[in-house]
Length: 88
Image 1 (cartoon, helix red, strand yellow):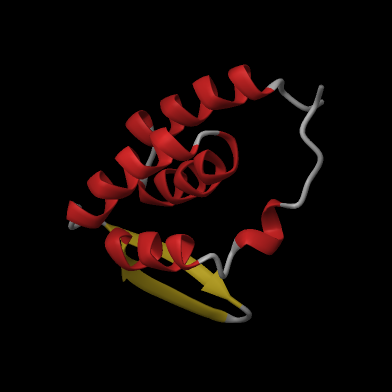
Image 2 (tube, helix red, strand yellow):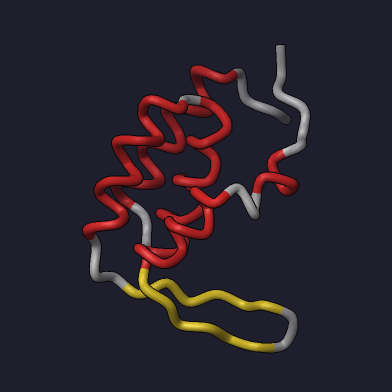
């Protein structure tokens, strides 16, 4: 079930503020889709962060700083995964 944009933004806020570094990354990516103003604010926080995000690319496990992940998100390279339909 898809959330309405306002509900999604609320859930993303919770995910960013209370989640682990991986959750913070997903929340930042989602906020890019729903609220560019809030995304810009979270981007500043993420770029100042020293936490490490653990992720997988293919069979490789990566450990990178949240600031590096934030830069990748901000580059737009991950936008293709944001093409899902937003509920009306």
